[in-house]
Structures are given as C-alpha cells and as structure tokens.
Length: 392
Image (cartoon, rainbow, N blue to C red; front, side, top):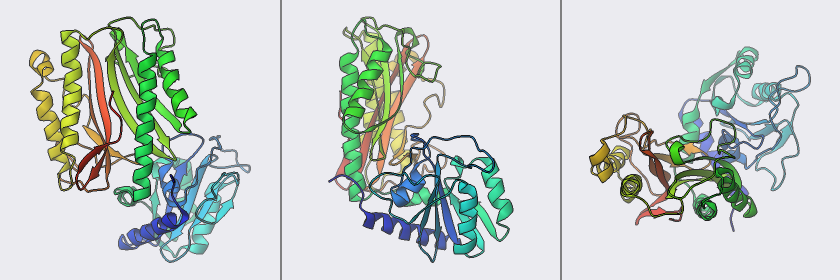
C-alpha cells in the first residue's frame, strides 16, 4: 500500500530532535507553504503528513496572518505541535497534535515561549517565510535566537525509507504515463496547449498532483516555455518536422517526479536533429550509469560532461556557453533537493548513497539550432541505478 504511516512520521520527528540537539539547538520550527502550490511544502509535510489547500491571502491586521502556511514547533525534549490557520486539513489526520489560529505568526511565538527553552532555535523552511513574519518573531522572542537551519531538513530527507522509495517509483511511473500521453497528442496540427492538456489530464485521472511543465516547439524550441503564467502557447500549432521539447513535474502523495523528453513531430529526425537528441540523451544516461553507492557527485557530473563533449553535436557546434543548463542533476523527494550534480563547487566531493533518489539530465538551447532536453529519475541501489521514469 502506498503512503507513509504514523509510526514513520514519529520516527522522523525523533530524528529531527537528534539533529537539532547535535547542532546545539533547543528546538526547531519547520515552516511551509500550502495553497495548492508544490514549492516549499516539504518541511512540515515530511514531519507530519499535513498539507493544507487554503490559498495564500495578504495579511490583514487583526484578522489573519500567514494564510496558506503551516508550522511545526518541535522542542528537542518535548512533543511536536502542528500549527495551521485552518482545521480543514483533510484525511488522513496529521501525525502531530493540531492547533489552529488565524494569526499563525503569533501562535508560533506563543508556543515557542511555553514549550522551548530559551536559546537557539533552528528555522527549517525559512525561504517560505516572508520577511515581516521573520522580523516579528525575532522582535517578540528576545529569549529565543532564530537561526537558519535548512541543512537539517536536507539531511533528514537525503536517504529515503522503503515507503518513500515506493512512492517515488509510483510517481516516476505516473510521470512516464503522462509524458506518453503528451507524446501521443503531439501530432501535426495539434497545439502546444493540447499536448499540455493530455499530460495534465493523465496525472489528475491517476490521482496525482500536477506541478508544472516547460514546453516549446519549432523555431522557439530553444526557449524553456512561453513567457506567460501558462507555460504553453495556446495558438501555436505543431508542424511535421518540428522539435517539441517537453519537461514535466508532478507528484504522488507529495513525492515528485521530474522528466524531460524531446520529439520530432510527425517525421523522421534530420541528421542535425539526431545529433541534438543523441547528445542530451547519451550524456544523461552516462551519468545515470555512474549513479552508484560510493561514487562522488562531481565524478558523476564529469562522466556526463565527457560523453557530451565527445558527441557528434559538440563536434559540429562546439560546447554551449558554460553553465547554460546548470547542474547535470539534483536530488529528488518532496522537493528538488541537494545534492546538485556539478563537476565543481559545493557538494562535488559528496558521495552517493543507496536509497537516494536523483534526477539526471541535460538541456541544449541554441537559437540557431533549436532546443532539446532529456531527463530521468533514478534510485541509487546497492546493485546499481534503477531508472524510475519509463523511456519513450
């Protein structure tokens, strides 16, 4: 059965207490966003399984503060408390006592004073906390020093449990199904919007949650998406021979999938298009093959880079501008996570462990040539990499 049981959430809370104590903290506040967004929800969800769909609303003094957000206050020597602005958090119930308050900031401050000893308190998920809320907490809690502690959240979520890996496999499979639906819809005469709709419908039909996409085609295939809140161009109809570049993100029970594919619409690829498609695909697969326990992150990235540099595409066009596509990949779970798969820089010397989930891939975007992307999800196992996003 898919899902995380209450016992595992309680184990996660205990693990976070241990991480906080080792860091010299008296407790942590995990802060997350809801409102049907899939950015910045992971820290509260990881500890309690709670996600609320109340959308964000601007603060109204005396009526509500931080609508659409939630917090967990977790002392190192006491029970967790979940604080939200709405009791309508759905089923199953969260794995922590729940208290609701229209002013979430005031409720967090009140509980910190009473439940957490004076001293340093780690804030996990601070990127989702608006500056006025942060400043208010600091001003009304002179005995508690709030310090950024996102590294605790990353550390707690780095290696996945068996239940999490089952969810990630299910999520990757759904991503493959949705991408297959998009591919089937990508025929000459169809619009980018119709391709997007086929993928979103497949995700929703299967009970997943749509997160986002980047889609572009033809002469604009080197761009990531339309410059509009809708990532597709509703009036742009596909023609035979067009490159269609498609990135898709979504989740199953909060656990994300991320994959990218590029197709030639209604025709066999030209020689130039074959070179482009092979370069992104082969470099990504080389990195996936290197995703084994004990491998350093930088070595995995260098393997991707070496294969790309030896590609026919690179031989004919040279290397794209440095850093054009960013890192070669990243961790995956309840969010896009470290480690960032780069040849150099922070984390390059880090070693991969069994039980980690990664996304590896590459994107080329050259206006005079076109754009292509290839990306797969992979679980690191003791016996080698396990690709969880079906190929097309």
